[in-house]
Length: 254
Image 1: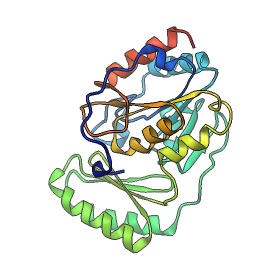
Image 2: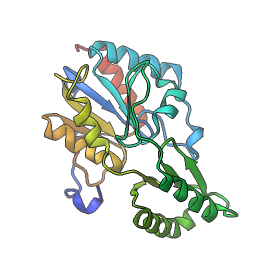
Image 3: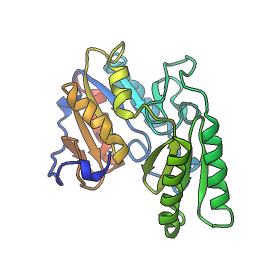
């Protein structure tokens, strides 16, 4: 979802603690639960965060899911193996302790990866991230290449029939047919998420579909970070504020 599809810049209030009472809670990862790192493997998930999420999940009778652009495999490696997961923008799902439900990696994604690698060769600061069923080109360390990276990604998406997923200093190519909003709708159809009121917390424009799905199902979204056009109804200033808010939810009434 692009900024042009969003409403004007809103003045959003902080979410009340009572919003989590009876919630089915959907949490983005990068930029929401942890600060965005310079490189994808630079993120550290501390034990306190995992313990907090486990307490909150128990208070919500299991109604907590991580919904991320990261692959399920990476989320598991980061410590979230015991949580309900949706990865690669709604293309992958995994219940705690269960095998991943995901489509096969397309040959077109391998072609896109080769093109990204060729483009990044010899350009300091560019990073190609191979994911389970997608590939990303990061230019956080070399913003001067952002325009050419966009042109390349757009051309590959068109020629290879892939979906272009822009992110923060990132262009990702993946199969289509899903997003974080479709992940919310899918998970809300069955236990443990069914029966709660969806609340989606995220920071990126890729989370807007999640905000929209939560709103359409009678819930709301919470935007993390600087104000921008959004479908969220509430905002939190930064990752530290998210953790403080979740602590309130973990100790308050479920």
